[in-house]
Length: 365
Image 1 (cartoon, rainbow, N blue to C red):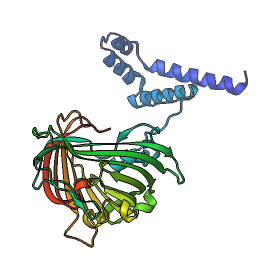
Image 2: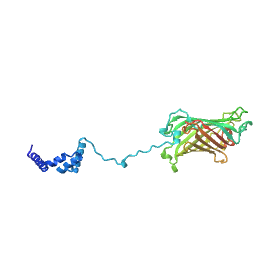
Image 3: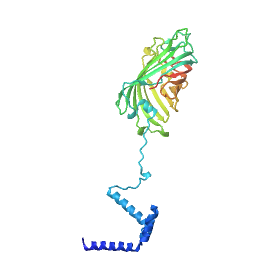
Image 4: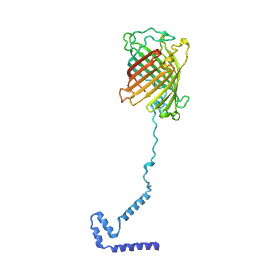
């Protein structure tokens, strides 16, 4: 031990001896007789001159030292403003889900799904039943006097994806089949015949439009382009035979719960003797515009068809649906349909009528 260290220890011992001498035995005995811990501590503080501040500082220093020895890193609290907020996840619209326009919505091929509405309208009333259909090349059919204005209307429409990522990124090729029948369900005289049934197979090519290319004013968004080829006929013999072939192109836009679809139909020409209805486009129109509204549980669709050359012709159709059970949105739905104009069926393409039907939408998947 060196001399400096010995001198320091000696000085400390002499200081402690001086303090002890200044404290009387009586004072110490008083503190020892104090039962309360806090009061006894305060008593010793008065005798030896120790303050609460010194003790607090010593305690803080001891705590900090312990933290350092334990290798604990002391960090300040994180300020709320520095927290990273994750970007909101985009929710697919009804149109994107229906046509599988995004990678997240893509499903397998060769699985049948619904296409146009599938419904059964047992009560379908027309203002003017077509008892003697006619066309320029097929003449006039024999009148069916027993046809009733009250009948039923049935539609079944399905589709399946044949190819995915076809030709263009995200583009799909679909096959669809639709069948619409007018059934004289309430006609007991003629044993409830089917007055007409239209069949329509088609190929549909759907090309999704990227958000960067589809922006429109007012937050509207172009979602997809459509191209297709279709055949429609009623499968009857002359003079009731009706048929035509078409190619079409269109686009679809949406905004929130609203959607708009436009389609242009170009008829494929036929020879005169083979053409059941050469003036068909003049009556039903080559343009088709559909507006869709999905306000919660209900759905509404308004469809207008016209050629723009004959504005007095064409047709409009309104379809309203509402779930029978609100807990099963994709289950059975009430279906109200109103139609006015030409071409409610292919047999009636040149026959004007107004009709209203009430029933149910059968399924939706």
